[in-house]
Image (cartoon, rainbow, N blue to C red; front, side, top):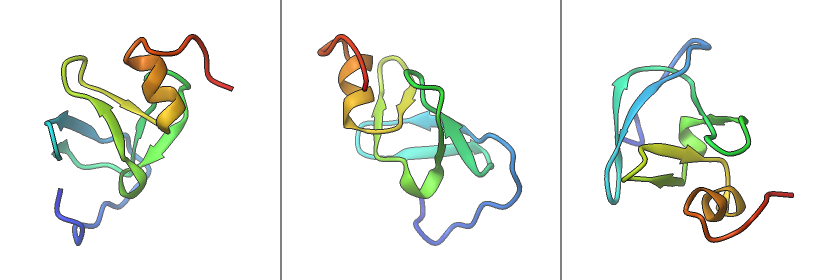
Length: 73
């Protein structure tokens, strides 16, 4: 993702997750965390699973998504 890209509207983005970056397939303002269901603004997206192609809202949710922790507070 180019940090200068702007995404308008309130639509959910479609993202392809790669090892060190992600690619926007369909522009949107956010993605939905696979663990918590929280909306994640694209500018705040820091955690994802390449194999599962899932985004995570924070480190705790990522741990659950990777199967390393039982729950999220």
